[in-house]
Length: 248
Image (cartoon, helix red, strand yellow):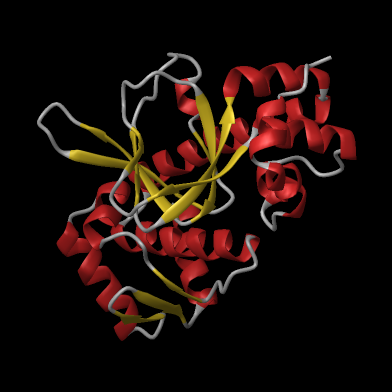
């Protein structure tokens, strides 16, 4: 049995029920955990670590010690190319787990930067790994999350390999809409936390191309753009763009 970690019980008694009452727990943790299993998880998790906008949660090359669950806010992950350019590798929002790419190398492979004032929960990896051996549902959940990350990477490769600029931007907006819906947020009207330049870096497009594509979508009545506020007006037509891509 894993020995209790009493420091959390003494210093932060409110953490004992944090995971079990969190509205995002089904995204971060498996469903159906027993009360005892949930308490064991909560003893390990440090909840509510604040990260200010523009601050790094971790940097590429730093030693890997923990996974992080985004509790509140938005992050971008990025790597720096040999010529010094930033390449965005992903955007993470509340409910997402971050840091899996560091497991193999024992250090973080990218920078994780907050796009707005955020909070994360810290999951110490060695302790969570030991606990997951005792709780098979927890271990399976981590496997599922890692598999989801692989699929997401494959989707990005599809974006960069086969899709036109219109298809890439449409897929990006529809993916955001789907992820907001999973979290029971408004899915047809939302603020973009990232800049258009950052979107372009992620999609393999120039800033000007992203801006022209959004303007064209607005002219076509697919979306409404007001600064960073996006309203999706015709989801059917946007999905048809992707269906056309699948038929290429």
